[in-house]
Image: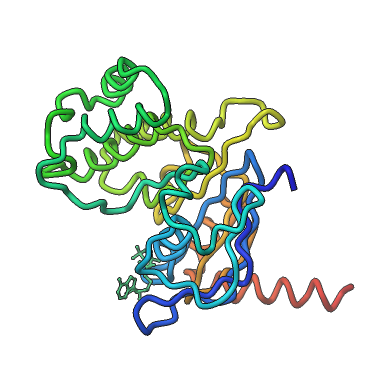
Length: 259
Ligand SMILES: Nc1ncnc2c1ncn2[C@@H]1O[C@H](COP(=O)(O)OP(=O)(O)OP(=O)(O)O)[C@@H](O)[C@H]1O
């Protein structure tokens, strides 16, 4: 139990009247990183939004337990205070709110010195963006780096990253990968690692820089094919998502028949 980071139990989620997720079960231990794959519209972002407590995503079944606490009915602030962080796929631009103001608020809350913000901003090539309205007119790659900058200052224990490599150019993808490795303590010996995360990726490019402990496919609102993330990616490339899910199902049935 002390090793628990996230437990998602029989989760069912509706967006408006639509059932997007059903019977989702997921367990992530402290120190583990999960790669989440799935075709467009399969529910990956919905899962992340639900775990972070976005009120537009209504849990109609099951529970979400974070660090041993049932957070299903808790708001986003509560979850963030417990150590959850997220980098959205397309976060909104906010008029009149500068990136630096948001970072200062986070730093104040976390009790970290303000200088650190400028160090991190330089590291992420974001120094020139600090006085701009957050995400307003930022390019795709700049938005991703802005999200990561906020996460670096926040330093959450559990991080959800929605396609952190999409729209990022080849030079910056290495930097983005390096930052995510740092956030998820991937360079710390496994037994000492305490940070966990979920990385959504379509191309798998980010996995060249950040290793994941395992991967899973979300297909039509249900989880399938838990296993080695690199093997799953290979299978998806070879057989497509549907073929891959069918293959996993066949292997699972064979395994049960041979028991
Ligand atoms: N706010 C919303 N209103 C209506 N439908 C929604 C909303 N959010 C998600 N959905 C629907 O829920 C389904 C899952 O969407 P979601 O964004 O979770 O998929 P995804 O797997 O992240 O897709 P992608 O790979 O394209 O980002 C889709 O059919 C989508 O249209």
